[in-house]
Length: 353
Image (cartoon, rainbow, N blue to C red; front, side, top):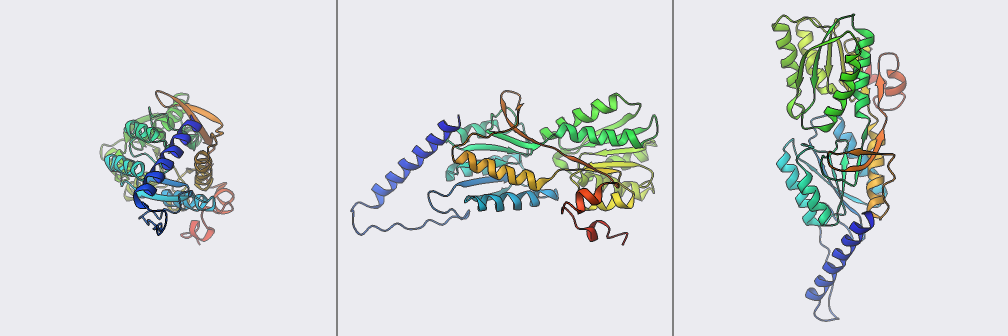
């Protein structure tokens, strides 16, 4: 499949180049080639061109992902056109169609709606363009590569932390991420499996459409207003956890409730050392972005991705490069987050120092 798509892409570019040459240079002499500068900064015909469409930059980590991916791709001789869909599924489809029209070599997608891109992915494949699902699996699309973390393990870690720290028989409020994000379903499987084997109870279960952080604030506030008693709040990411923490703080419950999230956002790391968030799941995004860029350039060069696993997207088995997340607590935050260079010590301990 890799060789077929690459060959189609090469033939397409060769035919286009020949046609342009015939139309632009009717005479063999006196014909000069002009440079065509575009908004993506496209270079020569031999420069690998990558289109990258992000869901949004509302979540803290995505800008870090972008910077490392673009930097790594540049070091490998590729150019990247980054587009932001701002949480709009139709806008993301339009961006991917734009990349197809521009004739890029590969498209990397952080999906807004993992279930709504199969048709446009097929269009990209028909044009000889590789498609990479970055961090979120595009369903029913047969992408060329899915690269992400073990998202089921993320949910498992959250549940294990609550089981180890909550009182026996305690109640949990669970606020997951966007229902259109396939990672959410994977994390939910891991979370539910652990909780089912414990004596803890999930008394409220909500999803945050499009990862809207204020959802967590509203859910926690409503639970308190309804007179529900709970000793744990599980949030799909640290952005949600920040809003849950705000609601808990307003009712002077922040130090009494076990709060968990993921992404190791700075605010979450600060809460962990302060004692108002139990844990977060750190996903080394620099490693993810670097490997994604390397795999993408390799595919453009005609090399099949040597992923460690495969994953079923609902219709196809696709190559899956699976990275390992890390549970971060007060006990290991210095080693993992600070010594690892993700956040500086003066940032993490700002409110204590």
